[in-house]
Length: 421
Image 1: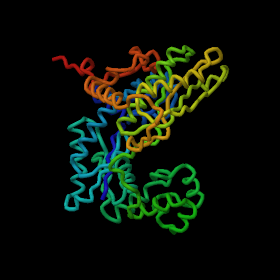
Image 2: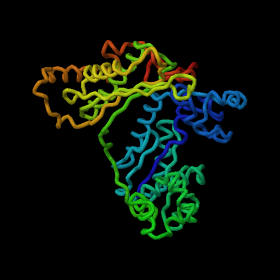
Image 3: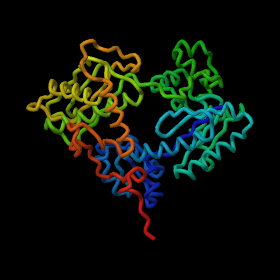
Image 4: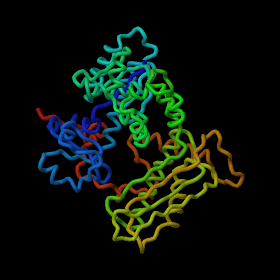
C-alpha cells in the first residue's frame, strides 16, 4: 500500500498561517513579478478565480470581492515544505518527495497498521506541528493513491482521508474520476479516450491492454496496470542528479543597463554553481540567454543565447561566473533592445568523480575547492550570499517586483512574528 499526502492550497495556507486575519477571505498568490495567479484559497476558488489569471486584468474584481493578494514568498514556502516533509517522514521508513507540497509514503512494511487511523494520525500531526492542512489518499499503487487523495478532497473533505481498502471502494473512486483527471493523462490522451467512448477511469480499466499499448504506448500501459492495482511506476527514494541546471529570472522592469544585467547573470551563475556542488557534479558547458518581452509587440524583439565550452569541467563559482559574463558580452546589444529576462544554464553535467583533467589547466583546483567549501559552509550557517563574488553585488538591482510580499517569518530573525500581549 502507498499513500499520497498533499498540502491543501499550500501557498495560500502558508500565507494564512502567519496572518490569521486572512482566514475565511479569498486569497490569491501571484507568480514572479506579480504577474498571474498561481495559487488560490478555497474561498478564491469559490469566486471563480482561475489559475493563470493576469493580475493587472483582475484588479477591479479583487477590490470588489475583498481578495487578499500576495506576492510569491518562496523562502517561506520552501521552509514550511521542509517542516511538513520531516513530519511525514517520521511515520514511514521510506518517502518520495514528489513536489514542494506533496509526497508519496511507502506503507508496504506497515501491514499490521490500521491504515485509516494512520492516515488520520498523519493529517492531525502535520496540522499540529506545522499548521498546514493536508489530505491523505491511500491505495495499492501510486496512481490510485494520487486519485484517492483527490477523492478525499472532493468527497471526504471533513476527514481529509480516503483509504481505497477494497474493490468496492476502488470501483467507487474510479467511477467518480473523469479520464482527464487521471494522473498522467494529458489533454491529447483525454481527447482520444473521450473520442472512443471512455469517460471515466473505470471505463479505462475495462478495455484490453493491447488497445492501450497500441494507442497510448508503454507509458499508457503502465498507467492502465496501475489503475488495475498492479504497481508499475518506479520509486525515487533519493532524487536523481539533474543533467542540466537552469537559473533565470525576469527583471523588475525592462532594462538595457549592462551593469544590472551583468549583476543578474553573475548571481544566476553563482546559483548554478552551488547546485552543482550540492549534488557533487561538474558541468562541461555554460549557456547564457537574454530576451525581451514578447508581449510588447510595438518594441524590437530578440532572444539571444550562446553556449560556451569550459576548458575543464567545473562547479567553481568564479569560473562559471567568468564564462557567463563572457557569454553576456557576446550577446548583449544595448542600443536596440530593452531586456525583460536573462538566465544561465549549465549543461552536460557529470559526477565529480568522472572529471577528466586538462593537461594545460594551470589552476590550483585543490586550493579552489577548499575555498569554495569554506564559502558554502559560512553561507549555510549565516545565510545565503553572506560571502559572494564582488561582481554579484549586494543591492539586487535586478530584483523582481513583489509589491505584496509577506515576511519570511521562519527564516529571518528580524522578520519573526511578534505577539503583543
